[in-house]
Amino acid sequence: MLLTDNKKEFYDVIVQARAHVLVFVSHELDSISAAKIIRFIFECDHIPHTIVPIRTKNELLRSYQEHRYNVKHILLINLCGTIDAYDLFIPDNDMKIFIADAHRPFNVHNVYYDNHIYLMCSINGINNIEDEFRVIPKYEELFWDSDIEDDDDDTDVRNLSLDQLEKRNRFKQFESKRNKLVNDYEEYSYYSYSVALIFFDLVWKLGKDTNELLWLTILAVVDRINCYKIKEVESKKEISYLFDSMVRLRNIRSDQGFVIPPQTNDGTQSELVMKTNHLTITYEKDLNLKLFREWSIYESLLHTMYISCKFKIWKFRGQRRLHLFLADIGIPLNECRQKFQSMDLDLRKSLLNLIEEKVEKYGISNIMGNCFMANRVLHHRYSCNDLAAASRALLESPDKCKRSNQKFYDSYDSLSWSNIDLIDSGLNLARQQLISISNQVRLFMDSHQIQLLNNVLLYVNVSEGTVDEVLFCHPVCLRLLSIYTLNAYASIHAKSGKNLRRPLVLITPDPERPGISIVCGISPLLAVKECKSFFHQAYGTVSRRLAKAIPDWTFEENLIDPDIIYIKYSDRMAFLNELSLLLETN
Image (cartoon, rainbow, N blue to C red; front, top):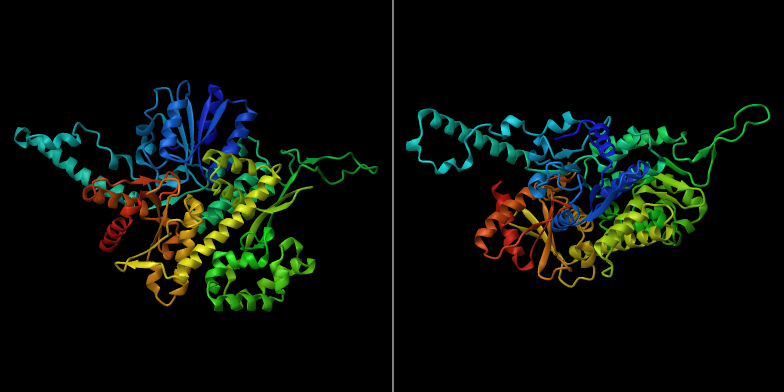
């Protein structure tokens, strides 16, 4: 069931029980930020809890079996909202499972369970139960409250009375309508508001919100925007909520960031004095360039997808145009190529205005934007985009010596300002990730590897043995590579409007499991802005067809991203052909 008040129906229940809470957290930055916030709340009220990182469905089931005994409350963060949680866990009679999941659509059984399963989705002023129920089929349209069951098909109709036959026919009509409703409801997968935002809203209602917790929420929201997981209308609502929270927290002392000094000799109160541990957050006009404060302007322009595709940077003419742009704004190449922090101070201060004057001439208006900035006295000043990229890079580190859980806790720890070395390591990994993605896209374009199948589907394969396959096996990195590839291809073939309506499937080998490939589907560019994808349902349909044709067919869904699945590398062409035929008929 959907909770209308997270404080009363979730947190007050936890506090009153004073029982141990088992928290399962998916490998996403949004989930990690939410976990840090909920940990802060639990520690304030001395609620015992265990946080368990989860990457796959098998990990979730194994961890549940290991920890389920004597646990009465389970919290799932960005997990199980789209699958029947009761059927998966089969909880004890006194167990309550709370789910905070940004994935949509919700499983209808989770929505209409009266006990055991509770969905947290309400955010004050942004999202409420009515908004969620508006798209969910009604209870009476989904469930048949009668004695007729599906297995009644085996009943001999000659033994049924007239009333029973009429009831049977009504059930058949109901079943047909229900199947259509469910198929329409589950046709597209998409993301709703950030889970970290749900818990920040809760901590605000509890009167425990601080700038530290607000910054965690900002990182979660910004990361989802940068990964193209939420459409513009909803992202603006989230940013507006965060901005209002920033203004509200600016002059209060809830995080012990300000102290009131003694009165002056004339009896007046001087201004608030900032302590050295205070975190200051601002919202400023900024450049939509990747990591330029932690890199150089030239490298950032070179590896930012928007600029790269606009200039077609993988071509010689595109690089000349980039140099012309830099010359036009009046920044010498030797200044552009060195670290941003080492640039001439006057150039650095005027950079924003210099670029803004030329955006219309070069058709790159989206290079200008806004960004949350944060700094603590005696510490570095960071952009939310940079820190979000650093934490995500640590989570998807290519280091084979580290287990997935260690990468999770590295990302978790990097969200604390005291771990400057870990943050720097994350920034280095983020730069490496951008370079690898850009190089791979350039290879695709130079060697014309992107193919058109049955005139409806674009596909491309990452070759086995590629150096960067250890990066591309991670969900977010693979997703960003796929989106970058589709944008690059569309920019080259801009004259053909059909390319804006064609989806892309990118296939890469899984270095952790030889013989297995990872498939990532990206909706057409016209649909990417809506952040909705049809691939999840299409994958299931294709898999059911291939299971009949291929005896040893294997198919595994990704728990974090519904657009990613795992199949045998040898079956990839059969899969692509069947997928293209499905798209051709629709």
